[in-house]
Image (cartoon, rainbow, N blue to C red):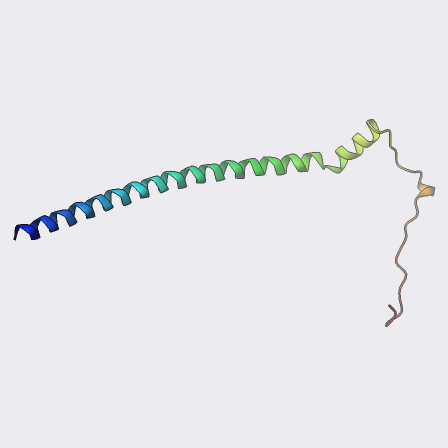
Length: 94
């Protein structure tokens, strides 16, 4: 009987150590997951700020103002503007 008790004690110790290791791994993974969630939130916030900044820099009025002031560009006179419209093509023509 004592051999059986020793074997059962060893199995119990082995199972206890496996349980402790599993709990430690679970806590480690949870801490890593929370850190990644925090990083994802920060990246989402940064993405929103970058989109806002892009919309500010690409504002047509701002681009027009910069083109006029920094580059010295100006709109062409009205008589130099010509608008092309597509010609109607016959049915079946390539």
